[in-house]
Length: 156
Image (cartoon, rainbow, N blue to C red):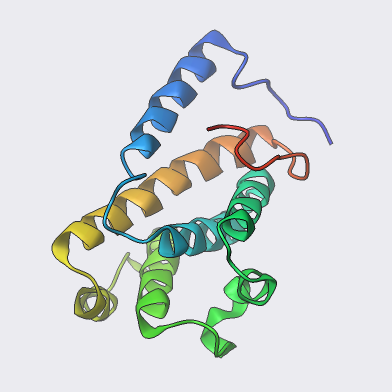
């Protein structure tokens, strides 16, 4: 499968992508754990049908020490016993945020549950991770960037 457009190679697309990549660097030292950030990125990418982002974030999560079992069960996190209550809260907010058009956005209940597990700075980082991965997902899904060839640290 080939991408419809070399978005990174296009002057307009490349400038946009460099800008959102730069925004993502602000999350590197955020108070939200890398584990939760990668779980959120994987789940959003599954929902949004973004093969290249799922490729990137499953490999980055594994390189950071995430287990194969947890990576493989992200899609069915509700039925899996391997996620903490905090991770479940983050995944619920992620799903609702990715599916805003289907039901009106993140419910007060989901937000309150997340707020039980995360401090305000962590919640701000969670919102940023969700918003940013959705932007990446949409670009990559629209131009149909294929997954499978990513190497850990490739975009570092």
